[in-house]
Length: 193
Image 1 (cartoon, rainbow, N blue to C red):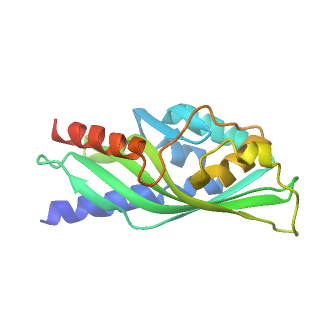
Image 2: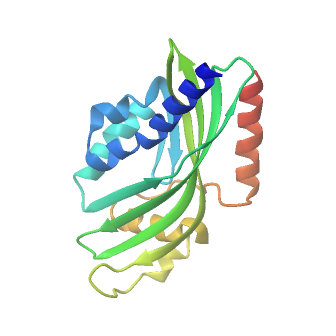
């Protein structure tokens, strides 16, 4: 029981470690992933280490982000060395040059592994629930041809990212979608291996 409490605390710390991205603490962010760990989110798919490099580029752009992370729901495998974490989060983003932003509610759906006594991310995916535009300095016109290309659940985030030079390459999971169900089925199989 004590070991599982320690594991739960480490996994909570791992989820809250996403704060390093918002603070530009790149080495700490890189340390959240195993060396073979991957991430699939709106603007990036690939190795966690490459995601950090992309985040450095984004940090130097007109885009600003903030992630509010809740406590994860954790499911361990029988051996206690793998876990699936589903974590409510809110992505707040804005392009300071265009004066348009968004709030997007999502759930990080993570596969984590404990290797050599340390929990890190093996794969991070995101399921998008809903979003809305924000206008920090007053209303600005939204290009409907761009925003209408994306699923409603993350259209606002996709719009801000595309207008900032970080376009989407494919469709991502949304609440209740077949893609969400597929992700969950595949991850449950991984957990039981």
